[in-house]
Length: 290
Image (tube, rainbow, N blue to C red; front, side, top):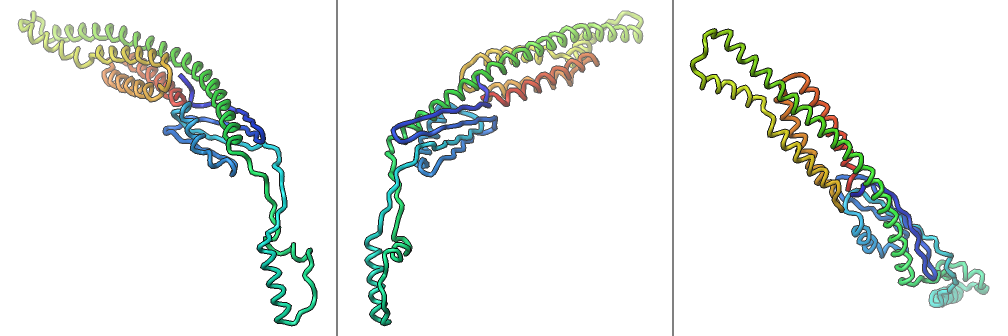
């Protein structure tokens, strides 16, 4: 189990290229990947996204690549064709307008686009090698951090699940005692109105059954136990479990609401409030799980 929150950093180097990759993930309802690259590396964005997708399947991802490569060799080139055109234009202007004077080299080199500074091009293979290495190391560091955080979250959730189980047990025991008291009170009330032994025992049994059914929560508590067991098992699974955990806690809340509506006394109602508090704590923690 992994947390959706983490950070990883990695470096990659080849003959003429050195880069640093940084990747940050946070919880998010959808899978959103943002990739920021230097201009010379933008052609590799699809490969970087594919590399990230093999490791991160949920949450918001911010990826940055820094180019720390040594300065590339530069050369100055002249645009011979353009110089020829400038000279032709100067000669034509001199002849037509009877101008005197020579066009100096200094003046010629100041004309637009005559000179161009050209950087040595990098080999695409060197860029890919350095980039792949940096992204791979960053993802490994991210995975380590997310696994560590996920392990911590898992232990915390197991403790909260244990607390929920204890509250469910309290509700079950309290429900038995309350229903016993309610049946006793019901029979005493009937006896007060009908001092003579009640002949219609079938009717009495029906009324008692209706009273029990109105407050019966055995089915809800059994489902809560089942969902808790599924929660514990899921916390031990590998891979992406966040959505399954979210579904389980929704179902547990549904059962808790029903138990609350059938609460037979104030103590049970208080226990249900505590139950829902613990479930909300789990729900909040689950939002950080991939």
